[in-house]
Image 1 (cartoon, rainbow, N blue to C red):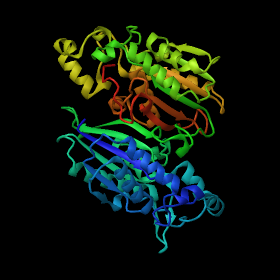
Image 2 (cartoon, rainbow, N blue to C red):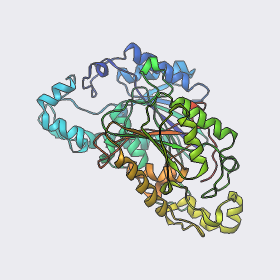
Image 3 (tube, one colour):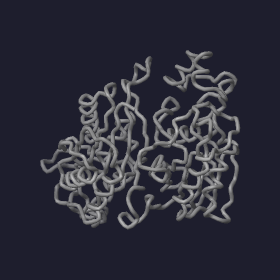
Image 4 (cartoon, helix red, strand yellow):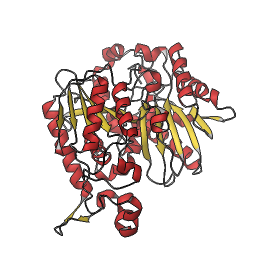
Length: 453
């Protein structure tokens, strides 16, 4: 890790509470709950050295940043940036969401369905597109951030405190995605998202930096009395919880496992138990796992608190077949397949494993298994799915709008929890509610074994 970016949405504001449109007007302020959320986020980040901090100048974000830094124990100077201002929804600012829906029904429907296509009219009569403008603003901020904090330099951690829409656009900009992905993301008040940025591997001329989502929309650091739940609430449509299996000895050693059926080690069993405790209050209707022992054992550990929930094995969810690499350490693979291993790190979508699979093979079968499960759920149901690193990465890349070339952009810690909602049904676009939550394993920063696939 060269540059760690912490993205935090402001705490609950007065307009959030009233369901009013805020935009970039500065009429809203933190509520008592919002202030407590800011303090809880700062406490969760204690122990990290924050090297730089940026905030939107709007009060609800600025006050969140100040309270967070004080609770975190940081003395870093807070820099305000207009490029972190919230989306400009001036014609709607101050109105209740219900009033916007009544007064501007077509525009409101576009905002909810395809916000990148929304056109509004300024006071001077000129038309503008709020989300494309915000995407350009987010890219401008990101370019300045990377220029000021070289990912190729010494390791640094940078805090960025902003708003729902601008932070979604920043996530899209970090991942190189278009504005059409705006509704695939969800960010709660005082949520924490962690991104790791490093120089791109040699030969990756198309991308100057490599970006990894370590976690997205984490709220597990907020106590239930502060936010009501340790996980974002379920809306309409089915929900799936995607979990990576707990640690094995081969994970700890950095040995390529693939389809060799290695069981959980003692720490992996503890991780499964911790995930089970974390998800104790979630109501599962069904559960699925890869047919291999490590995800099945993890699922069984979680389901100890959910008697009667059936567990079904899905062969499409087994780990990538590494062929002749299975059972080997990275240095052993490098000795025999140095160029192919370098290609695997640089451009995984181009690699045919010797005697094994391609990432495209895994992509096709993983999504087939995932989509079959999602399509089988009713709108009221919630399902648990436990699988592997490469399998989870391909599923999440597809759900985010990424490609097989991007699997290194998604981190999956042993025992990490991800939530996916289908608010409009399994045949429509999903929402990545949160990704790779590992606070139940010891903190909001993922410290699970690096390991190998």
